[in-house]
Image (cartoon, rainbow, N blue to C red):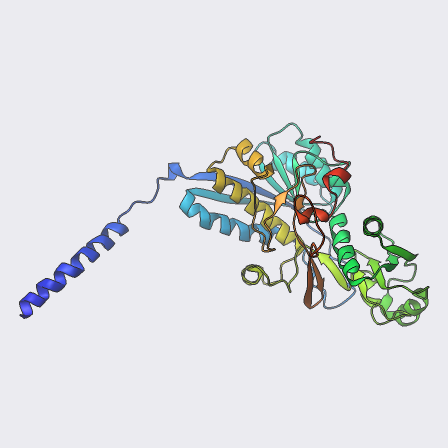
Length: 401
């Protein structure tokens, strides 16, 4: 009986052990069959401010690069099954350096997929330099409306929501709340003027009224002047909401609780419009938030998320097309079939008329997510995401017309 039991168990176990042994012996795909996609990341470092508005502000010199590194890891996880390998090549430019010169010396002719975290002027300079080359530029650093309109380039895709998209997101929420009368406060930098221009466009587009507009003319040491200056500065006819254009954060944080009338504050401070925020936890966002924090030891910034999406867009195209051919990947990324998961519910894709990534825009307070736009009820014949920013009929970009 004991001998029979041993023989019976051997008959059952042996095939399992044999199968496991056979599985372990399955060879890895030959190295020659691995498709390699090289991606370049060009970043210009930022000079630390001499004085921050708050000791709570954390200065990040190289926003974006950790987002790209996280996406490379995700691409290569998929690549293990598709026999594709993604390699990130990082290039840094000093704050006073010339990104175009670095590009010419170290990147031109070597990379076809290039992600940049630069200002508008340097982004445009590189776009023009590669005009006749098989290179696709992924702009992960600018918010400028002009780069999506009269200064658009066919070889450049934009990952961050531009100022018009952010202004429209805020205006949709204000329309929902019936905050139709605005008091607009504008800072003294060129960027503040650009955001104010976007806000005025949105006010007109959604039927809002700017009852008062003022330039912030006071000292930027708001900690000393806030109590007296802000109260006097904000005396005005009645309004529903104080709208702030202070992209550098020089005074906007000190407007809250000091205004003449008790009104909510939105814009660049208070309730802000952003592509990413630490409080975002919907559609699997918590998972990527934790993964990024483990990698970078800090919260994910907008430029990090933009760089992440750029690398993932290349990975998605390579996976779907099963190709590394540049034109095949470029055409797929720009095609109507392209759909990228971005932890925002709706799939993300690039607008054919200006290269802008259509995406939901988050409205967030410092410690809470307030809303996700487009707001329900704002309709569009193709996709509600195109209710944010310049629709095709409004665009002055002509590269695809």
